[in-house]
Image (cartoon, rainbow, N blue to C red; front, side):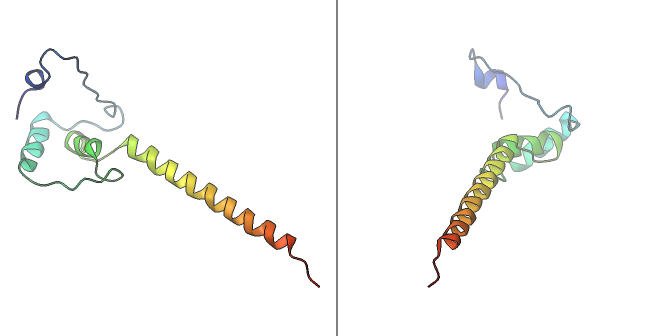
Length: 101
């Protein structure tokens, strides 16, 4: 465990607490306890449901939230829906072209 200023040194960094207006931040002591609890433990990573943004928001707000993952899931859903629509339309147009003798 190190202070951010010690890790970043002279590099530029920015603290992003973009969810503070949506979720009330937990007291700093609780955030620290939560973070200390996971030190040395393996944490399973999943880009859609358990990524680094989920991890830090779980520590800070008590709820794992990831705007990045939500956008990815929405995109996957949209692509799936469009592919399904094209598939349906493709099958539908083939049915219209069938000639009966």
